[in-house]
Each structure stands twice: as C-alpha cells, then as structure tokens.
Image: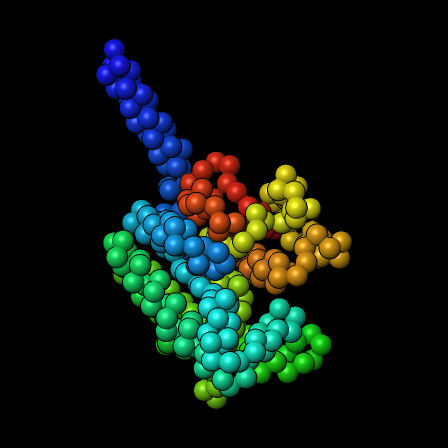
Length: 297
C-alpha cells in the first residue's frame, strides 16, 4: 500500500511538471527568435546559488530559441578592489567618481574578472557565450558624462551610439553576448558607463522584445517596506509624477528612466525584477502571472 501511494505521488508530481511546461508553451512561442536584453547585477551576482540559477535561466533561454543579450554591472567588486589598494570610493548622484586609477580598476574588474567569470559559467552549463567590452568592434561609442549639476566626475561616460553589427553576428550564430559597460570615445578615451544605461541603449538599438533589469528590490513599491504595495505595471507617463511623490527615488530613478527611454524608442516592454528570487527570469518570461514591475507605453 505504501509503495502504491508513493507511485501515485510521483505520478502527480510528473503531471504537475507537464502542466508547468504547457503553461510555458505560448510564452516560448511568443519569444522565439526575440532579442531579450538582461542587465545582470545586484545580489544575484554575489550569491553563489542565485548566480548559478541566473546562468541556468540564460542557457535555457538560448536553447529554446530566445536570444538573450547580457549586460553586467560590478559596482561592489570595483569598490572592494579599490579598498584593497587603498583608494576611497566616492559617488555623486549615484555615479562613481572615476579618476584614472579608478578607471583602471573598473576596466580590470568589469572587462576582465567578472566578464570572464560569467562567460565561463555559461559555457560550463552548455551555453555558447562570448565576452565583449563595449570597446570591442566599437560596440559602444561613449562620450563624457556631465552631471545635472554640471560636476566633473572624471572618466564616467554615457552612450553616444551602439553599433549592433557584432551583436547581430552573434545572434545569427546562436551565441550569448556578455557585455561589460566600458566604452571608448572617438578619440580613444575609455569611459566607465552605468550598466542600466548600457542595457537600455542596447535594447533600443536592437529593437529588443524585452529589457529586464535584475535588482535587489521587488520592483516599484508605494511603500518599500511593504511588498504588498508593489506596482505590477507603470505607464511611462506615470514615472515623473511617481518620482516627484518620492515613490521612485535614489538608485531606482536611473533604472526607471532607462526603462522609459527604451519604451519610447520602441522596445515592447521593460521590467524591473528582484534578482534575489530563484529563477526570476524564467518566472517573468514563462508564467502567466509574472513578477516585478513592468514599464509600458
């Protein structure tokens, strides 16, 4: 009797799995051959278990015909290395003040250590990943960023142009591009660029189906202390009023504005997801409910 009960439980588990796959089927069909730009950052880059789940999600996406393009951050790792060599990290309006020494460290961490680690993990799981700096094939042409207050914060840049030819080549040959947010100006000067901005600009240039920003918050909440106040959808015209009300504030402002710019340029939808949730990418893409906040037109 016990053996029969165990078998019935196992059968029900398999039936439930089949149900999950059937729920995912229309979403798989909708996103097949679509470009999805993912900004990878926050706790999901630090926690070993979450890191592995994000890599698994990306490999699954690539294997079922979706074209993920990954743009990664690395602020905590840059700060940690600066501390080790005795350099003080400074920030203005959420942007790292970047002198020549800080720029060397940022490029070393972003284009070297972190980019290579992500590529290695994806390839180990059976993916086909290629690491890129924004300087490769002039992928990201940058210019010096001047803050709203007109302050000079060093070698911090903004995106002037994204040249997608190399991304199209990788897309046609079924490779996953992994992009570090380092760009070069026309005169050859290197700049460190906000990864959210790079992700949005890449989504715009590719006319991606989705832009997804992985963060360390549930999304946009009216009360950050209460997950029940999560706003599942926010229209672009609601963003500035929500900023004025203080609902969107701090580091969330550039993320939401990056989503707004992407939507205005023709990206179908943009999402702010909690990367601390296991398999957040799969839940967002392949379930009827979805999670986080979606920015729409």
